[in-house]
Length: 295
Image (cartoon, rainbow, N blue to C red; front, side):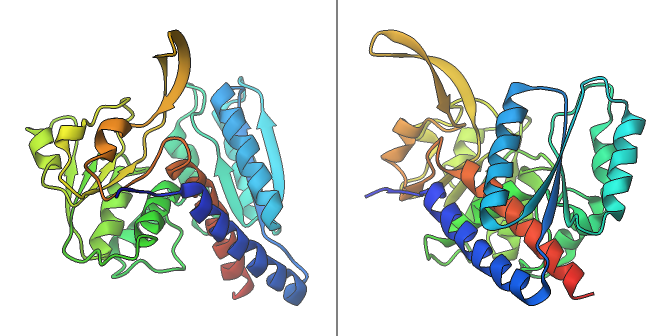
């Protein structure tokens, strides 16, 4: 019988553990972690994500410093703010909500965040540390979504060693770090992308399939190996006819209904990877805080 991997439940456990740890640290040092959240403009989806991240951070005991800038904010103005936050003692993590307006160079902004305060785990120094580390070090600042995916895999209590893992997508945010994390678990990892030939056949040989391409229901049920594990990172809003009416629906990159009957375990959309991403952001902020205390 297929196990539906409950991202909400796993994320709640991680948040509970962080809340307890932060309470102990606050009692011992009379300090608590601080997270600066920077949003430029008023993209509706970004506002929803920022609200969810802020709420979760406050619930576990992290102090949030909100910086909501207008859409015409220049790159120089944003960089000045980042520089200020880099020096601010009570800020341990800095999150710049993406996407940024087109006139701002996203990579330049992300690179300007001090690596010790890199809540998203995107800074080149942290990416490099992940690449060269021999194992999945608990103290590394790791990109939140792929680390959340790994925690969901580990929740299944199976031996990942030797498993053939196929990651569809080669982004710096999900695909590449996901491959690195799986490699450190001794999986045999294949990265697939838009130029991959015979993608369906490649997927059909995967023991673990991670889909992160941003195409609704792209991966079909007959692509999936019997008893494979599927982690669906995609979150896509589409119009679908439900009870004779066109309604908005969130779907993943995998056709869930087709895939469910083939898999041993699969993540739902929503309620799978999404909650884990936020929980891992709080993890990174807490790690940055502890690293600062130990200096």
